[in-house]
Length: 557
Image (cartoon, rainbow, N blue to C red; front, side):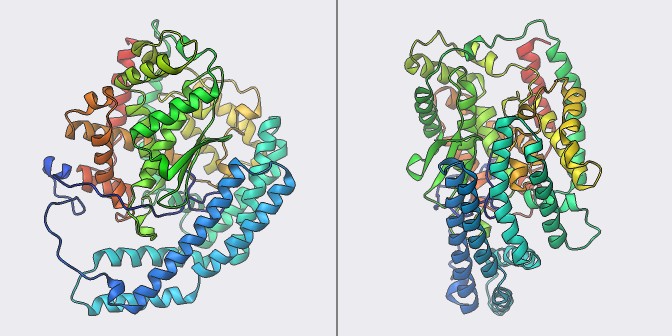
């Protein structure tokens, strides 16, 4: 899970990372015959002075925005400590909540200073008076104006309330999940939904925009609910019969190779070796352990990932490590400016990077050869791990209660379930107290799974405790995007499969940097970026085709 920057305390991933340069010997867009507005080129750039050298207003705005970014990074450090290292007592949570509430108020005050609006206007005037286009700076100003308008609509008291609630809600969620008792979390969750709705009411442009649509825009900018509905409908229509066919197969692969005794410290070493080889820079980050795997960035030189482990099953920890490393590599390779233009485009775009690595690399038959070699060499008392046995086991399909442990074929239905529930709560069609019952009903009708306790049901995810309502759809958007990127990456790189088999990922990572990472928020939406870089908008065809071929082959159906 990527911990996003949308809310200052719980969701506190902050923009900005160290500069990353690759030698643009060629443009993949040119190979495809496209002409990307933002694709890399070998042509010598025209020398243009940065606007901050010619506009005092833009220089002051630039410095102000960077100062706010640093404060947000401080908040992120506090949040990471809370989720990984801080004592778990209610007193500790209350103290940290008070600290983060004060910091959130300071950030909010600086972000809503009327001077920012004045500097934006003055900077635009300076651009108009200049002989240069300054397209980059225009985009910076447009993003800053949008954020400024949104920030000024949220009262300081509400921002402080949100920050304090996130800390208390996280602690309440952990307590309720441990006890598997939704009643311990019910009142707090109700407040989380109400507070998130208050924020949405403040930030939407007019009352004709549904609150849930406004919440979605916080995470997947430029993609409205109707577009998401169309995508989900096409995917559900294709996958439901495919899942039924696969589950009815008489030749399911064995999962025995996943189970046994696996020392956690050995797992951690193997996982760190693997993600480092893929391209995660451990000198600019670290790997830790937490209740729920996540990624958080404090800036260019410090991007951290966490995973969770079991002594009786090794793959879930590895999958989580690769997944989070995919998020982290995106953050480590976004351009370095400390401005919003150099932050991730959307949550769907970010999730596409984690799922690209987890599924299209980590779950490929070629990479299973790499895993087998590592396990046989380093796991004590190792059984005979083979490429085929691992490939079958990690791609096996089964009914699962837990979203993060679900196979990639049934996973989309887990996302759609959460999407439906949170939307119904926001739209007043479902009371918070009835979430467990509704959850259990949908799990039975959609996935034929019986939920026996709350911890394995509606308490399994951390998101709602962080007021991240509207986040869940981005997981499926990310999966669809990852499949489309994988299709074009293999098309552009003839050595794609051989590179994976040989545990060499430089070319693949460089392709992702060029197609996705370096662009930050220079595009208006994920659709716009994909259309410019790949030649078409988000298309579920690649996702459906990938799953259909893979699982029909594996299950011989």
